[in-house]
Image (cartoon, rainbow, N blue to C red; front, side):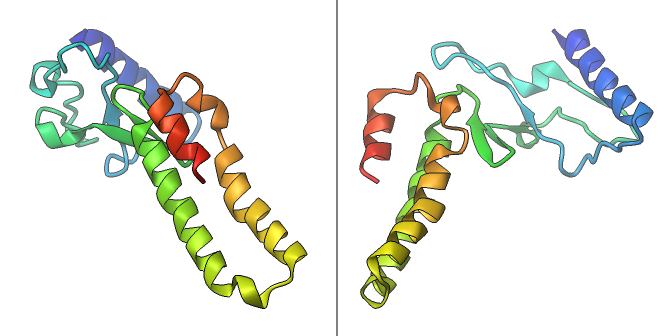
Length: 144
């Protein structure tokens, strides 16, 4: 597995260089996806990428994340989407609270437009990724 991951990262760097892109080591995140029933692989046993000029050395525990953000969606290491649902709940609750504060000063049609633009758009964004989440997460989302 070690050489396979190293080859994959080397291919990514090569493709990016060929397309005049640069891999930013400060913003590069590694997420090891595993089943929630399996033992978490040790990052120290992987030694994913040790190249001096890129400075992406993943031999310590802090370098491998338990979640990573891609296009505004938070993926966790077991792909249960719990962190995404929690962040979505937090954001929508904040918007609803703020709308409640100013709600009596706005006409009904304006309130509907604000809810559609601020709440429904967030719930609809990448909702196909939430297919297969457990009932507790669905119940949390339906409370919004």
